[in-house]
Length: 303
Image 1 (tube, rainbow, N blue to C red):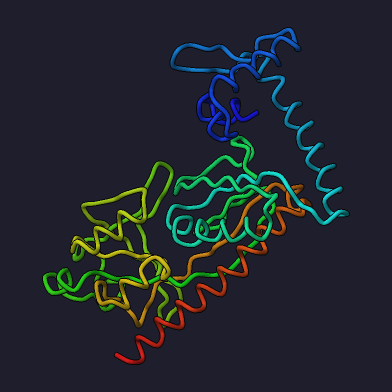
Image 2 (image 1 turned 90 degrees about the horizontal axis):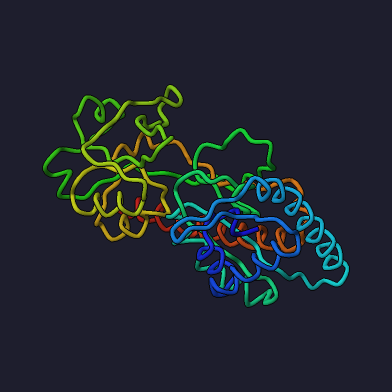
C-alpha cells in the first residue's frame, strides 16, 4: 500500500520502519501469492503495473475494513492502537503540532503518529493520509471538514526596513510597488492579494515584491533580514513581535483571520484513535493560541 502511495520502495520502507530489502521481499511474496507483477522496477524508479493499479483500490478497501473492525473492538476495550498518518503546513506543523505528538504518545502509547509537513496541497486519499491540517482558505471537498479555530494574522516588518521605506498605515500604502511584500507562493497558489479588515468591511489589495517562497519560515527570516513585509499568522511571529525584532503595521486595518481546520475521509472520524488525536491537538492548540494572543494584546497595551 505505502509503496503505491509514496511511489518509492525506500520511502515506504522508512515510513513503515523496515529496511528497503524487507519491503522489497514482502512485495515479492505478495506478487508470488497473486501470480502477477504489481510494480515495474528499475534501479531508479518503481511504477505500478496495470494489474497493480487495479489491485490497489481493492486492497485499500480491505485494509479500511480491517481498520474499521479494529476500531470497533478498540471502542469496546478502550485500548486504541495503530498508526495515524497526518499532514500539516510547515509553520504550524513545526511550531505547534510536532511538539504535542510526544505528549500524545505518552498518553496513548499504543498509537503511533506519522507526521508529514508541507505547505503544498496534498492528495489525502492518494497519499494514504488519515487527516490533514489546513491553514488558509477552506477547500471545497467531499471529505469531512472540521473547523478548529480562526487564527489572527498580522502585517509586520523589521525596524530597519520600516526606517528605510516608511511605515504603511493602510492597504493602499502596500500597492504599486510602494513596499516589498514577501509572498507565500507555490504551483497552484494565488497569493498576490492581501485582505484587510477595514471600516468598510473586508478589502483586498494587490501586492508584490522581489521574493517569494513556498516556506513560511523563509518569509519570516527574510522579514527579520530587513527585506520586506510579511502577512503572517500571529503564532508564527508573536515572539519576534514581543522582542521588537518585528513591528506590526496597519494595525487599524489588520489582515483577515486565517482558518485552521482539519480535513479527513468521512469514515476516519469513526475511528476512536483519530477522534482522540484530533480532540487532543485541538484543545491544546486553542489554549496555546489564546495565551499567545493574550501576550500580544498585553504587549500592545503596554507600549
